Image (cartoon, rainbow, N blue to C red; front, side, top):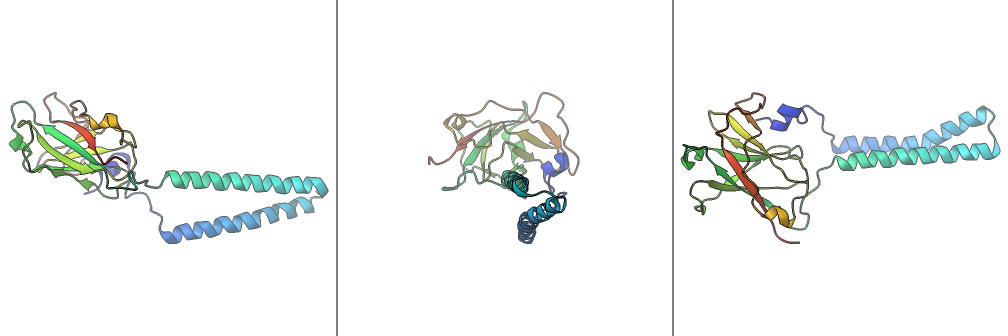
Length: 219
């Protein structure tokens, strides 16, 4: 099933992904540009009668401009790469609890599949339900692993034959801080979606709710 980020923001699967050969070709093109461009510009200045100090100033200006372009391009490329959240240890886990609406029991969550969706993951990350009984029998508890730094995370509860509930997690790109080890407030879904339909805002106040906290090893 296509990612909700692709459905809602058209960020995934519709945009081409660069392969290793593409990066190599881009690097060769950049090297050739850095070598050829200054020579072409200097020849042009020389042909137009520029000599001496002004020709040297032109060379310095061209080199500085190319350097700025190269640094900017590298910064844009680096910002677009998926950055691992915990490089030197296991991925942190997001612990969550789901509370059914008033009048429904936890059994209504028996066939529900939780998953995490982000623009960094190629496919949604599956979540898992805890098999041991929670302290509060009115909720169902589970967890999902967080691999990448991103502030755009969706926790999705997939209901077979019914509308999925989509929760926008209120976490920063790096939630490995002490304050996020405490339970969040209970949160209503931000979107609902059925089948391959576009997500829409939920209507009605009696909904499934979640709360969550971080669980990770100290560095």
